[in-house]
Length: 221
Image 1 (tube, rainbow, N blue to C red):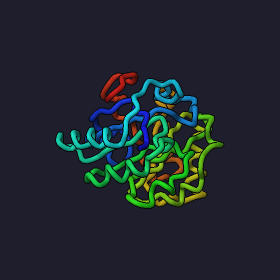
Image 2 (cartoon, rainbow, N blue to C red; image 1 turned 60 degrees about the vertical axis):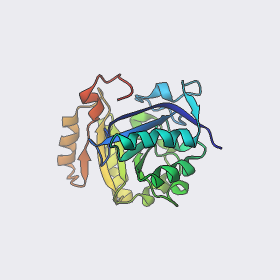
Image 3 (cartoon, rainbow, N blue to C red; image 1 turned 120 degrees about the vertical axis):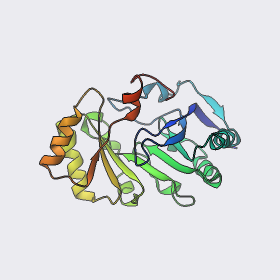
Image 4 (cartoon, rainbow, N blue to C red; image 1 turned 90 degrees about the vertical axis):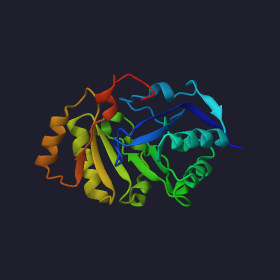
């Protein structure tokens, strides 16, 4: 049986994506293959990140408890959740419980193996120049995104905004597209002005709700 490296689990609101503001169970897993310059979960990314090894049964029991508390969504996040062995089986198990499964992925891992059986909702980053990780993006993922998925550009500079526009023009993704500012690096108003200037009517600005509601450094929210 697969073992998952669980960092934390908690119920909160979705802070990003199309279900922003809705209650969800969060399952955060340890480990990431990228090191973004502005990462706000670096504490969960390293090989030595504190975690508990759990099996699928433990995770489904956590999910069943969340369902009893009225939760209908589960967000698998990290780190990079798609690096966990047994993720396909976990998606299947959570879906069978009636939960809407959302995966927050960094855009570097091929999503095709994870969308064949029970199709989760994908919220996928495209890492822009300020992250220093753009070279690792898996461009084959972009045509696989559907209307219920989200492509998120986390922007930390004007250069990032121009690059995001280029990707949108080149690939014409059919999913929802969000621009999200790197907290403390670029003002949301600058992104709005860019959207107006470039006539980006198919893009939404999205702020990280957790950082507006709670202390930006707080975990488990």
